[in-house]
Image (tube, rainbow, N blue to C red):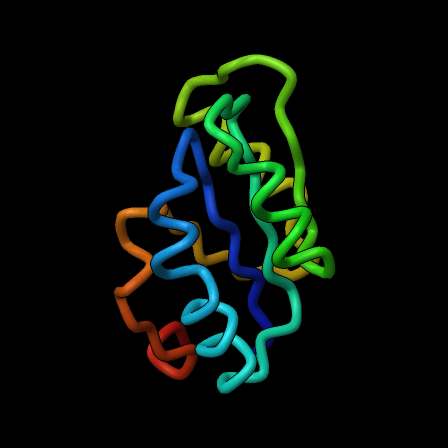
Length: 102
């Protein structure tokens, strides 16, 4: 099964610094190719951080703050695969197993 992993972020640069590389490692370990960040108009340097340290990760920047449900719907529309795992920065340390999604 192929899944997309979408991270919804709003002013989460501190959580990104602490945990995003672990998320990328976990996704690589599970052969997940589609990992992207939807940034909800952050003004804390999150976008600059992602562009500098993770230039290969797809980054979708929202021009203005959207509701949580709008962000989830938009993230699902950007996903390349049928199954989508949507994460928030505070939950980057949560481990998931693609096999349990079947």
